Image (cartoon, rainbow, N blue to C red; front, top):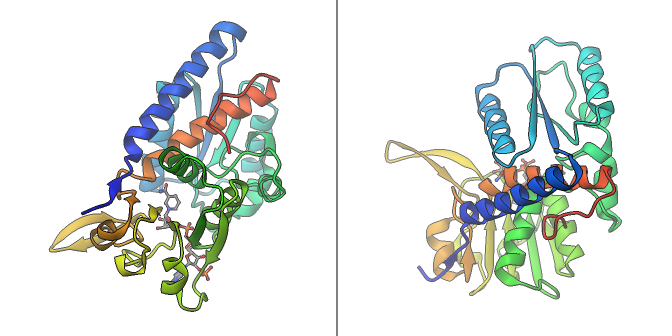
Amino acid sequence: MSAQIIDGKAFAAKVRGQIAEHVAKLKADHSITPGLAVVLVGEDPASEVYVRNKGKQTLEVGMNSFEHKLPADVSKEDLYALIAKLNADPAVHGILCQFPVPDHLNEQEIVAQIDPAKDVDGLHVVSAGLLASGQRSLVSCTPLGCLMLLRDHLGDLSGMNAVVVGRSNLVGKPMAQLLLGDSCTVTIAHSRTKDLADVVGRADIVVAAVGRPEMVPGDWIKKGATVIDVGINRIERDGKKKLVGDADFASCSQVAGAITPVPGGVGPMTIACLLANTVTACCRANGLEEPEGLTA
Ligand code: NDP
């Protein structure tokens, strides 16, 4: 293996440390405690684990965590009334609804209820529009985490060729906007892209966000390129359950200059960026200076 491993777990711990310091300062200097409200509908076991982890990490950095568990058959009116209450609550600086939600609810419509100033998941159309027009916004947590890792590893990204494989609203599109904002030359590839191997082969930075286990092989990667693997795929190999990314780590790490592992790469950055967005939203709501390095 020649590639340097980009340790997202260690970097996320550093980011959380920075957030904790800023939170302590907000409390000491302004008597303000940033607060994150998480809404969970139903009893999906994976979602319950995510929500528990988010709550735990929120408290660990000194912020307030407000968990709202609603029954799976909650009406849309009751859910929206809760979101409206959270929008109006000055102790709540960030709001997210854990997805997926039961079929009678619509995710896009739910996100539209959230005040964009508290949209710490960066999913509101206003957040997407602000990002696309190069204005200050709250940015989707996973792409923000990828950008932080890239900046930390490569420094100035200006002029680099970046290929984002995947065009989802959650990852691919905001990732491409962020890379463009850092003056990369950006290509967005997707399931209809012709000769994907050739497209990926020209990239200095490859972000793989396709949701297909180990789809990007090492022989697509330009020697020395940086590979950011967003994928989280649960597979079974040799009778054992395993987590793998969207890039084939074994072959990519032979060619790449640096690569994020799965697990331990991009994954830990997602919650760290959720906390970062909550602090950012809190500072903006109170007209205070934002912490450095935690926004796009
Ligand atoms: P989506 O399913 O929403 O999007 C996948 C994208 O990949 C689509 O744009 C699709 O193209 C494209 N794609 C699918 N197959 C191919 C192919 N054969 N060739 C080229 N492109 C293809 O997934 P997400 O963006 O939500 O997530 C992507 C991955 O990231 C998943 O593995 C997910 O688990 C992971 N993830 C990880 C997070 C983390 O915290 N680390 C957070 C969020 C996601 P098209 O649009 O044409 O269909």
